[in-house]
Length: 268
Image (cartoon, rainbow, N blue to C red; front, side, top):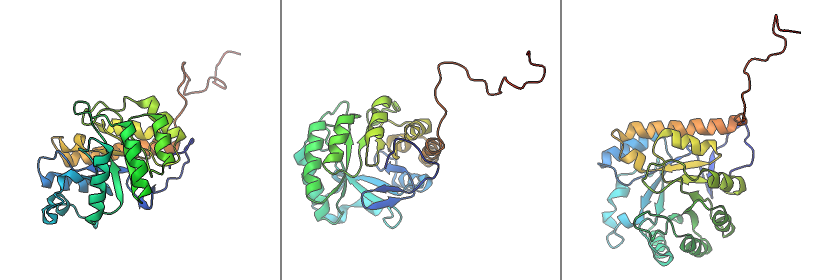
């Protein structure tokens, strides 16, 4: 859970009823091969792997090839509703996944915008309210909107997942101030999702006080996905440590690193 002031001791990441050691989540889309995906997951040290429910043929349970390539004894599967354009569609897919034995943990995505892939705030809140009432632990992907984040928390979501910048853009954390406010006000973990392109982006998100980052494209489309996964995990870890350590204030003027008092030969 995010707090208004850092402490020096860290603790595991707790989201709803589950606890994790890693603060990096990885997606499973866009990899050039299943082996690249498996190597990246292993290199990242992640404990949470997201899978698009639309990549599973619910009419043929034997066709769940993406799940067969993920070691479920090592990783927690976080099903997501990517590709759903309406609240009704996302709710239906989540229910189908639960009926097929994928559990009640779901990353909620409602995205009607095909060009910029921006989440629908109204549809997301509507779907979250219904799914929470049905017993789902909902992790909503959302615009970086502090007011919406509070509404999603109020209806019972176990985390909020504001975008750093548009999905797959690699633009980094362009919504920095809005995310800072979300973190300041949140009573649930805040996961920065989308737009992270390099380890420094992940570090910046964590330095703001985010509890975790979710990354897909930056790893999957890297020339060496496993190496990039390891690098971004390092960025997450470094940013988290910086947050816990407590950064110095940002000043509008210089501040000498060596004191000017007590210097031998100084004028009196």
